[in-house]
Image (cartoon, rainbow, N blue to C red; front, side):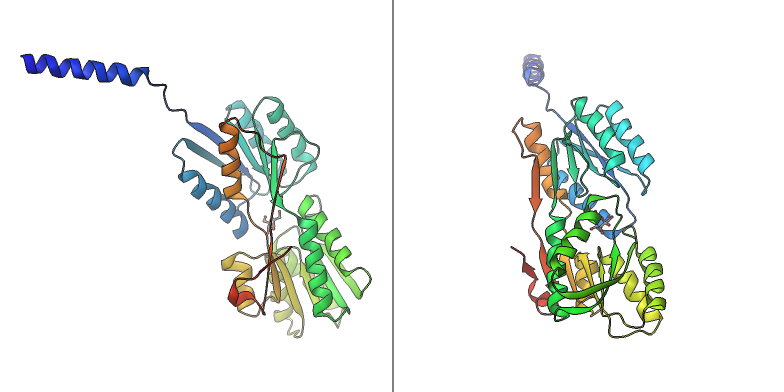
Length: 306
Ligand code: FRU
């Protein structure tokens, strides 16, 4: 009887102590991914998932907008109505996603914009690599590879997205003052099948092409497939992203001549979210570094660019 009473008392005091502890707060993060059709975006989500898994207090809800801007706008609005604690967004296009992101921010939801920037400043933090710098480095690498002269095809990423615009202007700066001629340029919207089609047109119009600059590795690879199918040899291919299983493997296999690392920023987004939850101030912009991978350095892990 006494033992039972004692056990009951212990139970009650433990329960009271437990009740007195503040409940451990959990945080829900809404992640709006513009599409999951490309390996790079699947990697971004995997990086976010892996980083968040280290912190049991975080719950990430992933949404895939399937490359549809209107769908992505609606998904941002849904996250706001659901009152998520923080929004991460990798927007398809800049202008049409600016307003829903601003509304989320103004509703008091911290917003981390990843990889493709939006317009204005109504968000908490932008995380991404410097696409102008990568484009310029690609231009300079190409100028060196071609000895300062040659005929180049430029297959551009979606030009309503900031990375497409910056990889284009950076590249033009990189080849400025050389005798490199861009004989054909087209918007392949980041998509390998579109790049392949555009390259087929370029091949039918031009007997001589020295090199293709694709704004991403799927684009450069699509162009390679078109050239191979047409039996056209002697063309070099350069891309951007450098995923181990994609661009780097292509360089190792001799399909691409060079690729530049475009870090997903997934891990950095979770780090930043944790700081925001702790009430720390975070920078408005976090710029991620890049690496060059070509035949000369791919075996030794590429080379960091200054
Ligand atoms: C994937 C992707 C990447 C590219 C990035 C630019 O959707 O096209 O290949 O580096 O988006 O935002």
